[in-house]
Image (cartoon, rainbow, N blue to C red):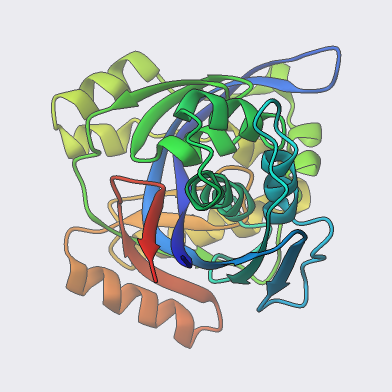
Amino acid sequence: MKLAVLARAKINLAIDVLHRQEDGYHQVRMLLQSISLADDLFFDPRERDIRLSCSSNLLDPGENLVYKAALALKNHKPSGQRRGVHIHLEKNIPLEAGLGGGSSDAAATLVALNQLWGMNLPLKDLQEIGFSLGADIPFCLTGGTALVEGLGERISPLPPFPWGPLVLVKPPFGLSTAGVYGSLPLAKIKERPDFGSLMGAVKAGKAEEALGLMVNVLEEGTGGKRKEILALKEALEEAGALKALMSGSGSVVFGFFRGTTEAAEAAKLFRSRGFWSENVTVSPAGVELKAL
């Protein structure tokens, strides 16, 4: 049996960084949302080894999270596998964008191989394996709308976010997650999200109220690119977005629009200006599995 999987990107509806641990990792609180933009992965069983091919020559197959996730599952005890697989990854989610593309690809790999190899591991086990590889992978395995806390391992699913159309815009540069977190002036953050009010608005289906409560403190860690991020947010709002925000550690900025037509027109406008841009919708799942 061969499998095809959609690995959906995520956006951060809100993110707060609470403190930096002695080991360098940061305690966070985030409201995450899966979106329709997705990478495509194809899984073809093999006798023994794991092989990865990719449509992007920017990715080193040996360092890719897809390969690492497959190897971790293959070596998982006590249910380690001697079987192999050829995985082909079609990249649609841009790199260094704050959209969790690598984490989503790893989550999709864990789900696909868990079925393909007949391991039948529960979600909790897959999330533990995923967390050992990347902090966003446990959420990508759950998908939808969720409050995420700690280092990314504590996930509380929420009702679907009550809004649909949005536009993603990526400036002509990426941002390093480590660089943004390292540059964040934790003691000088000016505005932090009110998660109690935000989650209350989401649960009550008060969409516009929720939009007004979104804050991403990592925007203050973008250093010399901060002016360009702020200008892109302003340009999205001038194009009709009700709210614009940087996703994760950037560099993608997203904006929520009233309707699909307005969103499609805005994405077209930004593409005409030379930006990568897509109009997408929120999604109830992070991974979608299909048999071929």
